[in-house]
Image 1: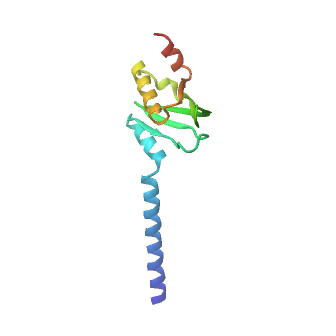
Image 2: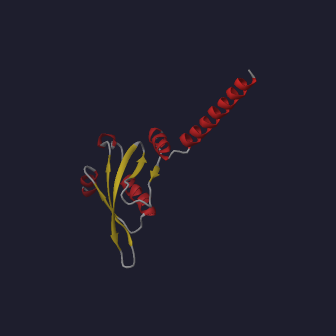
Length: 130
């Protein structure tokens, strides 16, 4: 009986530890933070700057943008030289202004100062009509 009691307590301890580990992974998950910011219409920039192949994600005023990074070279190094960015749901762009898109560009260029930002449709057409 005592042996079974010890095993039960050990199993409960393992379950509690596993729950705590899962909880920390959930709380500190960057994609969860992105989705929370998206729902609250806050700004959040999610990017793996060490991995050029991985697209960046940015949520701004409830609109989710995705950007593809392109590696190129400057005079002295290889770096991200171009970022093509587009809204995942163009129908949610209602209410955004030119200043909003310039602010998004500034947010991205803070991380990639050498990159040229190229907007996808329909943002590109909107910015060209000045």
